[in-house]
Length: 424
Image (tube, rainbow, N blue to C red; front, side):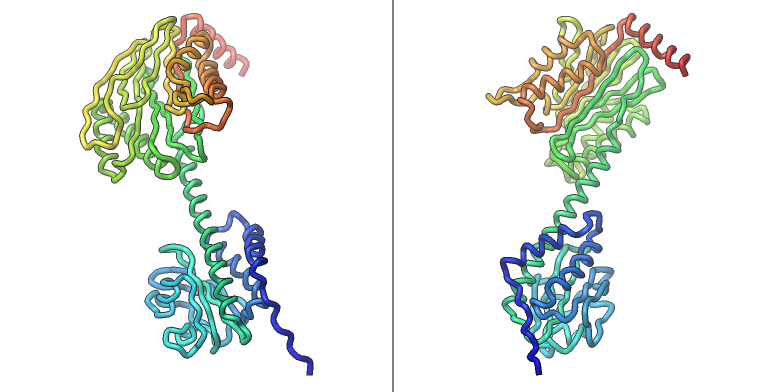
């Protein structure tokens, strides 16, 4: 009689390589449930010989218990389609995250709960409520407790990290979708004015934003802001502020009241440790600008050698329960340029630690004053990037430029527009 060969033991030094290889082979588009199921399927085939595995089961959280989602290998004796959350074996597994049941007859064993064959078993728990998963392994004779314990702890740590990474990526995708839904690709047209805007996040998702509102072609609302924080919390805060601002403006409420109301709402939303700085102004056809500055870096109004900082308003939105805001007023003469930016531009540092600052913004704005709004915006970004020696942005960088046409520019723009229509 030919002796049965001993199972090939899994060397610890190869385990992490195999786990990495398993993860790299998985489709990155899989949902969490699909990820766990696909991983367990391949894991069982990879480790069954080295760990004397007989079968495997996957239970996933649903309702008030755990539902059977998949089985692998031989599951003699069957398995219940549902396990109660308060079952003793589940309590042991979720308390310790990895738990071995060497005796099938012991109180609290998986076998006594109807799971699998009359033999040893082990289980690991991954994920967080309400998306936890229970991975059960049924073991044949010849298993080594220390090897199984070590391997399953390594598997739990690796799979848990992958799930956390997927959760973070999911949050970034949510935040990016929110941010992209708020930022307009192109500003609305406003007769007699040239408008340009751009926002560059320092990370995947930033807290900067800009927005515009058109009022029957007679006036244009311009907003720029910066929510503290990054990622999903900042994106949600921006969403609330922009939505609240739009709703208030649609009801024709006074901007000072809208800002005070926004402040109360954000303060009561349990985000009082966060804040939003924001500038909002309404520009009419004749160049009059009524605005409120809620703690945002003051936009600059440039015309020839004249520079005006638009500072009037109040403090940032959010930290204080009650804030009163005041309106400011400015006038854009023909040829004047309004440049609004976030502190990512102003606080851009060079190698010596010096800021780009307001002087840099004024200098660049004056040099590009005769060009279009887009050329002014491009000049600001290029100058700030050069100042930072082309290093990655340390903070979100946003610029909005509004230029009032001169009579010659208005005529040229109208001729170009009519020419396009004729050509069409």
